[in-house]
Length: 231
Image (cartoon, rainbow, N blue to C red; front, top):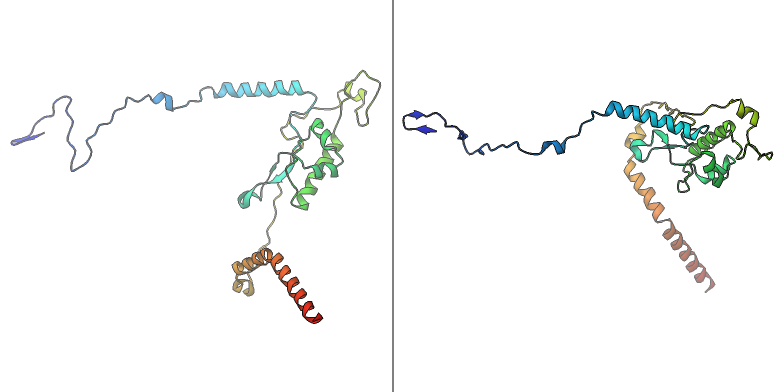
């Protein structure tokens, strides 16, 4: 504090006054900050636990693969539709085209999605080829190995006993590689520069929406013209 004769020393516990019209400092750090933080000191132990869980899952599912076959689909929206990723399941049309029964496909390690629809011929053909490749490598163990009856498509017991088949430990049973499409560059023509794309799109949208109404109007005019000719 200041006195008439100059500046006096601050007493213990007093607050130094700030300049101008600013707020007096009143910071208190007595909050329970430990509730608002998270530590990862158990990260190395969790890594070991995850590896042991994967090993236990592989032993439990053996000789089946640890993952299921999934389709290759495009990402949603314009931002991600150039990228390929694993989808939820194969469509019913894809399964039938590859020679699989949709109800039996789930028991053969194939994911099925009855909601997804095929929007392009390329995607449909890609997944059908994926299913056919899986079918060519598929090994079906008999339900009862001691039974003399054999279902069509079951593996031979001699090959099973000799352990000729290896378990697939990858998450993707059949991995896929994203295709990189090369874009050809060219110069923009003068007619393309002068064209109004917004106008073309607007006209196409209007023609699509008004197609039914215009067809009905044309039919009504044709009927009215026939009625006048008869009179």
